[in-house]
Length: 136
Image 1 (cartoon, rainbow, N blue to C red):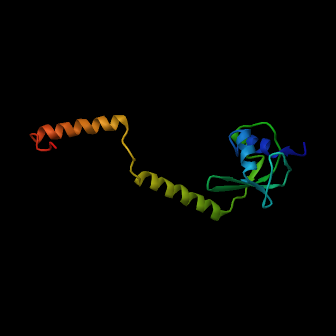
Image 2 (image 1 turned 180 degrees about the vertical axis):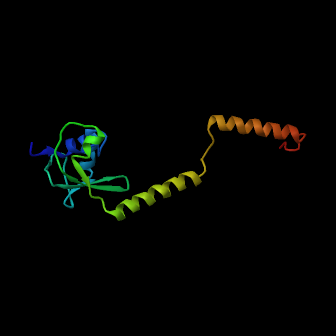
């Protein structure tokens, strides 16, 4: 085998979870070879350097061997070489850390049903303990 479809290869080496996701990534211009966006039907060859954008992260890999069937994660290491730059990895790590901090710091917009019931029970106890001083 001297070439494989791009969407099939991305799925087989676990860069995308499904073939339709791989095809969509190609259609949306998130997959590049040599700086050029590629279509799902483009043939991948050994030695190609593929950049795949996933969210804010960009992963760059070099093709070492071709496969068209999905394989285990350990076997993928024989087919790819990760050539993502150190600065790109650092940017991705910082984005993940910032996202985690923002998610932890942002308040929930409204309580869940369980939280609301606990809050109402607490406020009822406070109101009864205050002797009705908190009545509107």
